[in-house]
Image (cartoon, rainbow, N blue to C red):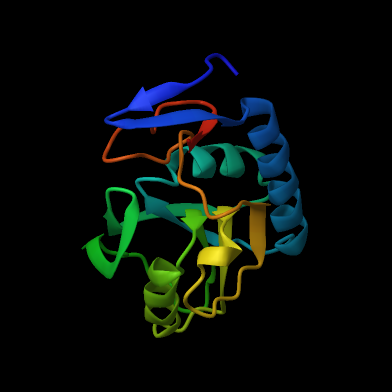
Length: 179
């Protein structure tokens, strides 16, 4: 990791996960997805903005044909989940009969997935699964089936590798945790 402690806005963060640790977790997850979807053409539904780095690295490692689309939702205000999902940019692709894999940066309360999964299922896909970089089991408020989890982490606030604190920190290649 390049730096020690950093400050974003008014909050201090210390190094938490290196590029190498993230790469190992993402590579392992891509291998599982590739094996499970061999012979099929899944549609990866990437949740922007936080999942863009994870999705890029994951999909470079997934073997076999697939498609990628992007949606954008928001349920965060600062460091706390607002509990309300606001859909900003919706899915326009035909999903009926398709195998969907939602790609999310972090599942903590589960509010976003609780909103998205039934909405997608209503359009008749063959299947809907979730692939998340991080899962915070201690924060979960909704029952959700998480088939693909790269890393479980404690209920700490993290930034970097696509995750932000009020818009800043997404560009950090490593992940930092609030101190």
